[in-house]
Amino acid sequence: MTSAYILIVAILLLGGVLAALGDRIGSKVGKARLRLFKLRPRQTAVVVTVMTGTAIAASTLGIMLALSESLRDGLFRLDEIQTKRREIEKELASVSEEKERVDEELAAVSFAQERALVNLERTNADFTAAQSQLATVTEEVAGLRGEREELVAERDRLQEQIAERDTELTRQEQEIAAQEERLDASAVRLKDLEAQRSTLQSEIQARDRRIANLDTAIAQRDEVLSDLTQKTADLREEVAKLEQYFQYYQALRQGDVALVRGQTLAINVVRLNDPAFGKTVVDVVLREANRFAIAQTQPGVSTIERQIIEVSREQVEQLVEAIGDGNEYVIQVLSAGNYLLGEENIRVILNVATNREVFGAGDVIASVSVESTDDFTARLELLLVAAQFQAQRAGLLGKIRVGADDLGTVRFIERIVDTDAAVEQIRAIASDTTYAAGPLELQLVALYNGETAIDSDPENEDSSDRNADGIDGSNPERDE
Image (cartoon, rainbow, N blue to C red; front, side, top):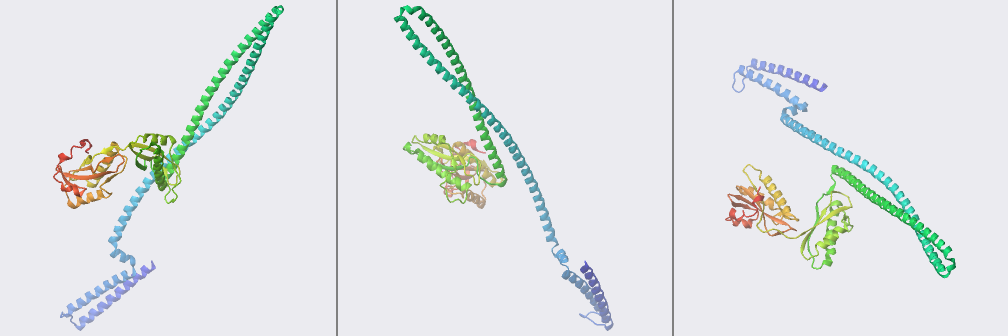
């Protein structure tokens, strides 16, 4: 602030000095009646006065520009500063909107996390209660089994007594036959023994009924125990799923998902002439899928012999049985879920299908119409999406590409732009016979008035006399 005051005072003093000096010079010029540029003395005095005033203004402006950087910026860079200010305000508004959107997404993820934690706590409580009930039922079953063993032992003992009584009865009958004189006493004793035998048989029947009832009770308790065991296993599985979902939400916030559900890990075409090699072929496919899974979930790991994919023995046996008839099949290994970077247990699903012909050469896969006001690139992307959908619905398991390499789409767009050709319709056509294993090579054809205007395969563009009747024979219902 002090320097500004000094600057103002200096400018005022300099202006006064220059004004006095100019006035003095003008007076002297007037008195001396000097002439400049062949002007009259009075006109010469006016010119000197104007030059003095100009010098005052120039010196004032020069001092201010030399000593004040802000004045220089305001005078020479005002438009640039205002432009930057408007850009900064726009960026600030965009950043504010992005911050609000991120805050909303963070709030949604936090709510989902809290709900998952509540479900996890509830499941843990149910699991603890089920374990307690399982322990109680186990103790009851053990008690019933002990009681059953005691009853079985008592039944065996009674059966032994019956056998002994039967032996004694036989001996008594022999004595009665041998000793007629003791018939009366032996008959009475025989009746007593028969009565004891009937009593013992009644007791045995009662014990058998009780044992049967206990067996029924034990069977019922075993069913309850089995149900509780199944419920415990289900609860454990639910806990594991909730923990996995919780980890997935955390990873989703950090962006660490390496494999997504349904992603293809490996795909191979096989034909078994000898069913004995089925297990070997499936192992080769699984090793390829394992290498791909390690590369995706553990990038940078050089050792790939360790197995991280998990597949049930039943799936492998069913797959080996399915491909053992000598036909050609496509084996596809798919990810069973979403997996994060660093995970070492990747569950997979095995898919098998006959490697049948899906499309013939020249079949129209999909088509879209193009208006003059449409975005050509957007319509082309829609065509490729529709072609992929139609191919998957027809049974294609492999990849889709345009032309012999992945640059066919780019070259097609460049030719459209370079030639500035009028286009009414774009069609995706199968370049060759395609089987379920793929890949499906597409040929893009741009039509105008029913005739080929641009072809993604330059060799086919010479046959421009091919009209729409030669193409319209393939699935008109696929047209968009």
